[in-house]
Length: 383
Image 1: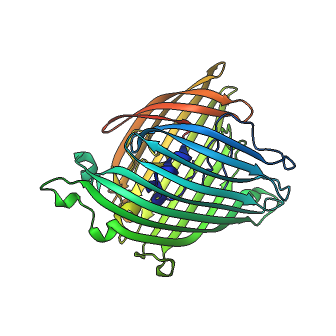
Image 2: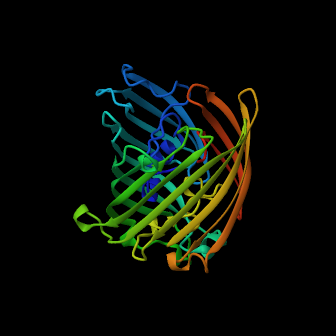
């Protein structure tokens, strides 16, 4: 799936809303949280509809918890795509919580699209250090993060016909203010402590973004391609304490192997300059790349991953999946092909059709990575 930049993952509510990417996946690479058991998006002339629903979640970084979302669908200009505005919040077993608001809209003919998100949260996360050796050692300190983050992304469709009519290009702006304290220090290991300057800092970034979307269905595709990317630069005039740049690219492809069988493949790449703060490095395992790894346990200047998932309908509302992937992290983009630390994962999962009209599944996966097993529960497919 596409997602907001890694910075926003420091907000628990962003992780929660990513898990709730069910009924309206926007085409700008940011999933909008929607409740599970509702019909698909309303027709252009439908009246406003307010939906309120709980969202259970579970993942290795934040633990198990519950979130709630209130989402308003409306269509003031009778556009091809309805507008979506909502708010959400939640709490997890690691005593992490967050709250946020979001908005998505497009013009009458779906030529211009806009997505915005803002949220505040507190999270208790493990920090293992930077680099593959730190992640493999498995020694961590506990950080208490308080963060405010905001993101805005506007894109425009330039071509009306042909292959490029599926392409949107535009710009993304991201701001985040982080105040992090060491909750549980580790005596004798000051090397594990992030620099104090970075623990209390802000980043403001801006740059180009794009989306190419040729899927047959936004929530549970059987065929097609979905690619998102962004290249953001830190800017002091946006309040950033750092001038680093960050590139992120995600590409999904879907292939029907039979009437009830689909093969999904996802590729991911990330690269960040060497002056980036520790919390905006490439975090291995985010966005489901790869399942089986705690997000942030392995972090460095570059990462990559490729995974395949076989999706099979079993009977009634039940389905099953099996997945396998390989990826890695490296010091920088120049070392990614020759000097990556390679990590693998695999697993199986069960799917339950929560909404037939919206074609949305509840998802339960167990995955095994280098450091053990991890359990995931959420709404919508992993990608």
